[in-house]
Amino acid sequence: MQMNDSIKKNQEYVIEIVDNGFQGEGIAKINGMTVFIPNCIKGEKVKIKILKVTSSHAFGKVIEILENSKFRKNSDCRTYLKCGGCAIRHIDYDYTLEIKKKSVESTLKKSLGREVKISEVLKMDNPYNYRNKLQYPVGMDETHIPVMGVYAERTHKIIPTLECKIQDELSQQIANSIFEWICENKIKVYDETNLEGSIRHIVIRIGKKTNEVMITLVANTREIEKERELVKYITLKYPEVKTIVKNINNKNTNVILGNENEILYGKGYIYDYLGDFKFKISPMSFYQVNPVQTEKLYSKAIEYAKLKGNETVFDLYCGIGTIGIFASHKIKKLYGIETIPEAIEDAKENAKLNNLKNAEFFVGDVEKTLPEFIKERNIIPDVVFLDPPRKGCDKTAIETLMQIMPKRIVYVSCNPATLGRDLKIFEEKYKLEDISICDMFPFTHHVECCSVLSLKDLIQ
Image (cartoon, rainbow, N blue to C red):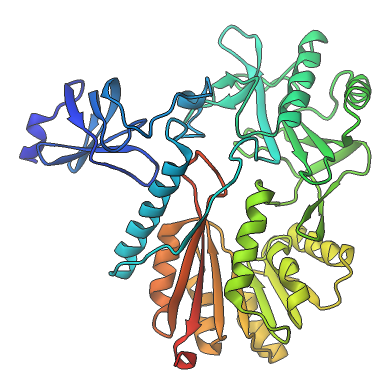
């Protein structure tokens, strides 16, 4: 394109940031071309360097900020620019919520072809140290010195991390102590270059309400040298640690956990609460990483469902059953479907743990299992909770729901783009009544949406 002739790689410009994108990046225009620049805020004047030019847009990096936004704040983290996790850590927290709100509204407008207003933003009162799950890789740096921390963005280079502002403080203390012990005892850590060494990840999960801690040591070898001494050291130093598990993962893969676990200490699981409900958490369990915001999100979902106590409810893509169990005391009968067998086992156990007599959970792909389940049982739900993965709902599942026409569908989504795509299909028979967003991951670009659809025939 001729437009590109005036914008070249490595050129420098002084520009004004005219907007922020859906990942929090700054957006500018140079000779009509859109340029994306990380770590900038709308309204700022910056000097940038062009890193890449395509036929339709370009990417740049900040050289100097000439005029600061009033929403810029001094970073309280040494590594966020390298790890890419908290991509908007340089922005005032309340303003990050505005960016997320506008981003979701813009995405839904593109999908639905009309303005969609977010009615409520569920912010976090204290947006720090909120994660209940820490996953630190352990490896070797360029000089073959052991290192633990987080990966630099889009690489497998480990950034040494003693403190992370979104991780639980006790979890970080324990991780640091384990790593110190590993170094002092000269335990061989995993080396990606030759696939040798033992410990490759330290995973720590904590019950935010119970303060129970589970440690999973991910090992490349079946035995960790001095593992009994390590267990003794940890449990004496941290009485909050209720169980330690060794996970075997000797594959050359980006997946953190392998399929085999060996309990080194305790029972192999811990407990935590969401609201009044108790949940068992094992190394392989999926459990929301921010339980404080999860309670707000699920409370909003139940509010949207307008439950009266006599409803039959389907919880699709139910995971370990958290949304359904959270709503179980307000409904007549709950049926949950999830593709992962281990998650369904957890869901069944969690139902027993909370003495629920009105909940059943089934393994299967939603698109296949749902129509079979409806045909075999002849059950039509009054309300459906949807909480699919980032790829959104399967089209067959949506078509099945449109055929059986439950009165209300509450759709929880971690991806506004696929949410908009699916809502467009549902709008043939349903009306989007309301939508809120929940800030589950403060200072990152991620956002959770909660929307409610009502059957058009029921709307007067």
